[in-house]
Amino acid sequence: MSIKRAIMDGFIWPVRVYYEDTDAGGVVYHAAYLRFMERARTEWLRELGFEQDTLREQGFLFAVKRIQVDFHRPARFNQLLRVHSAIGQLGRASMTFLQDIVSDGQCLCRGEVQVVCLDASGFRPVALPGALASTLKEELSRVG
Image 1 (tube, rainbow, N blue to C red):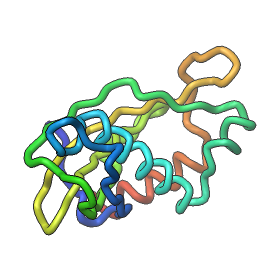
Image 2 (image 1 turned 30 degrees about the vertical axis):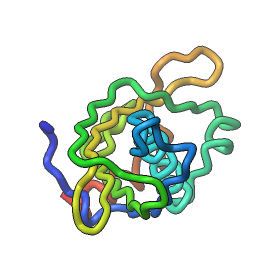
Image 3 (image 1 turned 135 degrees about the horizontal axis):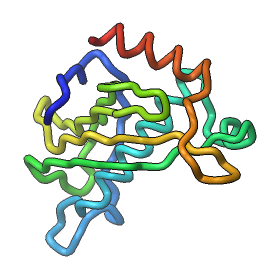
């Protein structure tokens, strides 16, 4: 990963592995990790006071532009995981989340997710809403 890791000081979201998250081998299917990361980002924004449906009503959408994921160890059915999330970079119209999925102190999966802010009507990049940008700048300076 090219961005400094500051995960331990960020947001933590617990996730339980359900049977539906596993593949034929009994381990978490690779796409399930992306869902876990998505949920953690959404819950973090919610905790910071930003609901995505409200942002959409204000004319803002978010879309994943780039994602890089490294898988280190498998997670299995019924395992309790923690998704650690932090802001790695903040641009005018984008933000990069650093996310680790951890169990028993071991990193199972590490991701770097760049999300771009779009105008809801035209799907063109637009500056992050001011209040959100300010809050994320504070988060970035807190962990950086």
